[in-house]
Image (cartoon, rainbow, N blue to C red; front, side, top):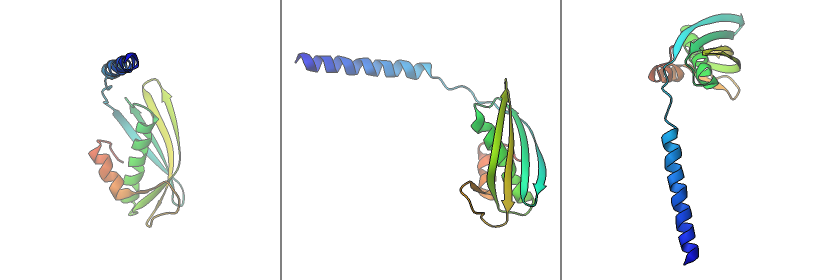
Length: 132
């Protein structure tokens, strides 16, 4: 019986600790400021995207902004797909920058990091991320 009481008390302590940690982890409001996109055709189908934003929660937010820009750019050029080549992210205080390179193409390119431009632009709009 003594063991059952110890286990019961232990479980109760864990549940109280879980409740306490949930209250302390209140979500941080996300209110990004998208500062614009610069594009540069590098060579052939390679395109460089430089994006800036404030209020990002982390690198993934500015990377998503660059992906949205690449998807819209592909559509503007009459292409349906893009493939991620690389992204470098820099953070200085509240200012986040991404320097990303994508290839654009009319057909699904080879590789693992491909995006369907039309679907991606729609997802960006639903998530409030501007495109080019």
